[in-house]
Structure formats: structure tokens, C-alpha cells
Image (cartoon, one colour):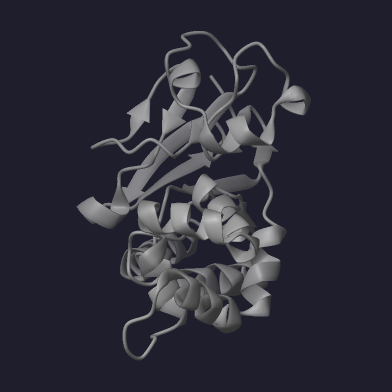
Length: 232
């Protein structure tokens, strides 16, 4: 059985996508669980895709930054954070980002008065984008290992060591990873591919339950060989 090292408990959280309401509810549940079961050191791991589609992306980032200040929290990057960073320096990337939910994120930072064309909106958003949020986004890790578990946003390319993985695969891969039936060397905990309920397989666990659309934000709790789920 895959295991977490002694005296540790991990709370792994799936894709949030701008749903501050769900994240707040889940944080309350995590805090309650930690209080009811004291002892182990608690680590929170967030699997990326904090922004886009939902209405409160900027506030979600604030909440995660506060969590990093007050808890032992690890925030990984998702493909949506990657696109958001590219949109800061490229109007073409900005246009691509708007098509995958970026407009909701833009409006969580700025509320333009009147109708703006895309170029004007891009400039207003860049002006309104907070420096501390840019720093947060640029410092996100791509993966995290704890015991027999590996945490990543999208997955791994089969046949390659973690050190040999390409960033693009860690943030974007789907079919080659999802269809692979064998071990990756670690049990991989991931998001990126929305499903109706968590998928627990021998080589991977998917906890992206499409929170922005379903209202279900999922947390996988790991301690020793035990694991269970908390969901909104």
C-alpha cells in the first residue's frame, strides 16, 4: 500500500477555478478535521487551476497566499495559471486565455466602465494586475513528492523519470497519462481532467470534480496508509 511518512497528514485539493465560496467551505472542513485529529504535521497541497471560469479568481489567490502564510501549504501550477502569466506579456495569448475562462478572471481584477475592445481590456487588466499575485504565480512549483505519492496538476508522460518530464506535460497531458495502466513509480494525485466523482486507481487518483460547474470541490486526505475524501 502506498504510504505517507510517519507523523504527516496531507490534504490535497483539486481544481478550484475561481470558486472562493467552495474553497472557504473546504478550508473550514480541513481545519475542523485537523482539530479533531491532532498530532501529525499537516501539509496542504493545491493542484493548480485556481483561476478562470469561476467568478472570484483574484480572491482565491488571496486565500491561497494567506494559507501559505498561516499553514504548511504547497501550491502547484496548473495550465490556467500558465496561460494567465503568458497573457501578461502577449496580446495573442490574452485572446487565447479569454476563450478558456480568462474573462471571468479579468473581471475579478478590474471592472472597466463602458465597452472596451480587446486591446483596451488587455491594457486595463495588466494595469490592475497585482504585483504580489504575479509573484505568487511565477513561484508556483510543478510537482511535489511526499512518501509514495506524487502530486501534479495534469499528470506524467509514461516512461520518463520525474526529472525528465517536460513542464508542458505536467500541466497539460491527458490521454497518454490517463490511459497508461502501469505504475509511474509513485501513486500520482492529479486534477486537470474533470470527472463526476474522484477516480481512485492503482497508479493515479484524479480529484478534479469540476468545482466551478458542479459545486463539488474535493480534498484527498492521506495519512500513513489511510486515505479518505472531503468534498463540498
